[in-house]
Image (cartoon, rainbow, N blue to C red; front, side, top):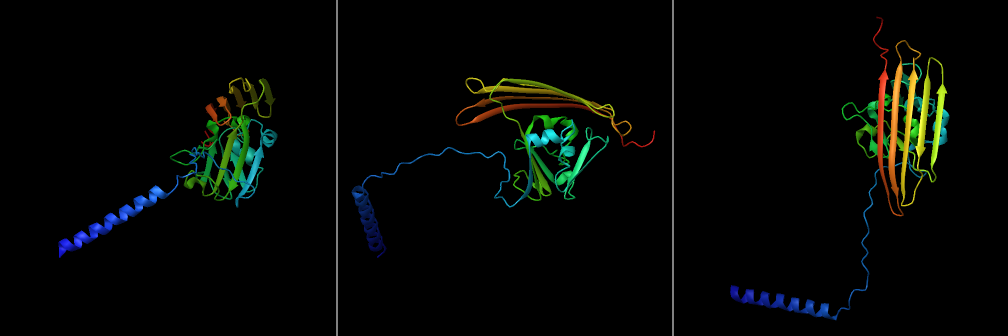
Amino acid sequence: MKKVIFSILLTLFSASLFQLAAKADATPGDTINNIRLEEVIVTGTRAGSQTPVTYSNLTAADIRKENAARNIPSILQSTPSLVAFTEDGLGVGNTYFRIRGTDATRINVTLNGMPLNNPESQEVYWVNLPDLSNSLQSIQIQRGVGTSTNGAGAFGASISLRTAGARSDAYGEASTAVGSYGTYSSSIAAGTGIREGGLSFDARFSRVLGEGYVRNGTVNHTNFYGVLSHYSERQLIRLSYLRGIQHTGITWEGVS
């Protein structure tokens, strides 16, 4: 009996395969073209006009208006819900800030999509990035939970920094400024512009000195920023180098 049942099942299975093969032979060839799409990698995100996020944008002109060789928190203190304070009293040395009462350990900071937060304390030590504002093209501040993709540090707010791109023509510029309490800053920048083949190189060197409003709040900061870029019709490759050297006086030791 088992052999009879097995024979019947085998016959039915063979008939099904024969019918499928016959249908395949009768079906005309597929005329749909298969197009393989290249992958897209998103390295940074920003809020737009249709994004349900409270944010503020600062353009290069806004940054230049607020910049006086100060660190980023001092430049951003004119934006809503942000309070900045500094140890030297001038906004040049060690600076800190809060957004909506949230301290720096819950504020995510990115530079061209790359996180700047310290992996241990989650803070950003702005004094190690002196005069970074002169190399920025724009800043976006997202208050509250925003579009950052870099973890729990974005609970309180997110700050997205974007460096300036290459200019179409070669350029060179220099600037210097003198302020109160022995504050002095100088900057030199130059670039090749976008050359034939899409290559460009930009570099900036700056120096900031100051005695500070608070006793012992001296600063001696040096910054170098260089970027090598290659532009093409379909992609942009950029190699950036950012170096900050800082010597900052200690103002919180008490009476000596």
